[in-house]
Length: 144
Ligand code: AMP
Image (cartoon, rainbow, N blue to C red):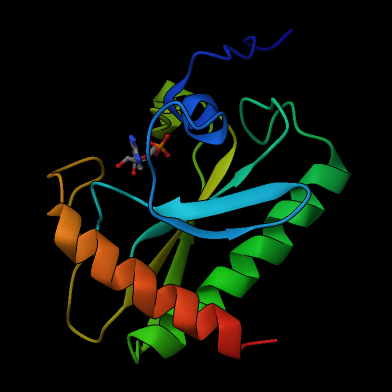
């Protein structure tokens, strides 16, 4: 028996509109927004709309929807920031580094020679997040 889903987690609150987020994308099953403690310029998150804690309790269908949105974000951030590559990360339970217990994938644009910053390190300036979010939204609108 795995750990239970707690609907007071911060991403559930974002989905309910109880706390703000820099929204990038939404469909029937998923939602995407900027990570407030980015490990690199343009770090964003795809989350499920269903109450799954992580990959261990999610259904294959919900994971398929998550990966489709993750791929959209990966293509968009690569174009938006002219990135050299994109890192996709996903953590399950505290031992792996998971800190928010609502299924999500990290999407981080990568640049040759630039290392990732620490996980859940420093809060980014809100204006920087807003500007980067706008670039990603424009790229999403131009990508199939
Ligand atoms: P994880 O450690 O994989 O569970 O990742 C949680 C991520 O959520 C971290 O990268 C945090 O920086 C990010 N995060 C935490 N709170 C918020 C928030 N309110 N809005 C956006 N991102 C957040």
